[in-house]
Image 1 (tube, rainbow, N blue to C red):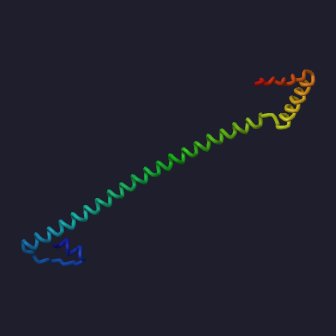
Image 2 (tube, helix red, strand yellow):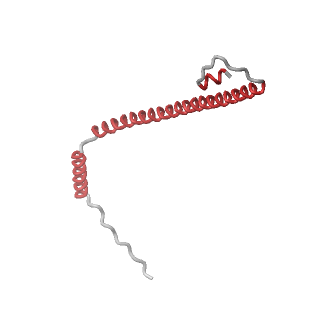
Length: 127
């Protein structure tokens, strides 16, 4: 009873004694309220713990995805550098056109020296 009076904000120095039935009822009520409070607090603690575990897992997944994207970006940067090196090593476009022109001249000279045979007409069968 003293605990209940203190919880309610009363400062009574002398509390008259309760009979056994009233004391049992107050004790049961206090025990029930304490049980509800403890179960509720436990649920809050468990929910907080579950949420923290979820947040840690989610952050780990995000970190792994970020690392994978960063690695992919690095791999693509290396591939880009390799392609740029290949482009720089390739002969200029004017050189290719010059080689094609030389090949055409060579073909023309070869055809002039040795003309291709004329196609022969095939005889048509008579019926």
